[in-house]
Length: 401
Ligand SMILES: [Zn+2]
View (tube, protein in one colour):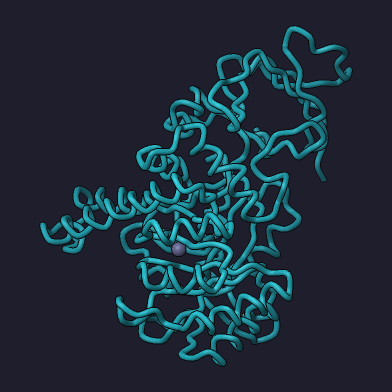
């Protein structure tokens, strides 16, 4: 039972990521989880008699962020791949911890782009673990709002461990897609890197058939894309978005912009890996060869995002936490990375808020409007000009305390 009392956040700055300037001396009245009004602090008008006033002076109100590429059942860290094989009950606990981390970092929405298959004890069926997390969190206002892709659909010989669905031809791919939607996936995640780097795992026609099936059932299709050859197949087949897009070229981004194909950037992966050169003994991060390879891929990935941005592609923002090495409270790192790739800080914040909402077809996500949900958090500093302000979270409006 939520005991609700109106709350007034008084004299904050407000970061609206549709432009570069903060609005100052802002008061926001919240009641029952919704924004009642947004007014100038010098002209608040009548207040409810039982209002709880929070002196927010010196802080900045920021729309709750959208982590558009996350893996809520996995913990991340330098052994992130091994952790996927942990027992399902442990991974469900990891998800609860991730839920805490996301909220405390100001992330309101998480788009889960793949979770391990595990036996559901309720009916003995194997299905993606994040579907159970979505059910657990659905009615809890303190938990992140999530949309779930089910498990990864991949060609055999790409990802080891038996945690996902493998499909080696068109009919198998279509069947896998259909099974995921039957299980309750909100959208589909195809893995467009094949067993050979220079070849896409499926034909454009095969992927197109999946896109038609999914769209016919009201679901979107996204695709992991580490290499250009897979990206091309995805774009030609009309997938709704590409994840990572580490090797895009000017033709690819031009077509994405024309079609409205989103790019979900995950550049901070490379920052994380570079940090492991200092903090681990793992040869792939520590060796000269490893460091050089990571630096090279990072430069190419930054160039891809820069090309996409300049071409007018919608860029949403993800950490890849769990499926990569970041942790669930690291989305600010990706916003910093987008600024490095050429976005203005306020545009990078828009990527981490409203663009994510656009990608999810959730018009209220990443926005603060009168009558809408009170999904905002407060930081110190100006995130419209300095993305590092997003690390300095003071309060989260949808969480207690
Ligand atoms: Zn991922």
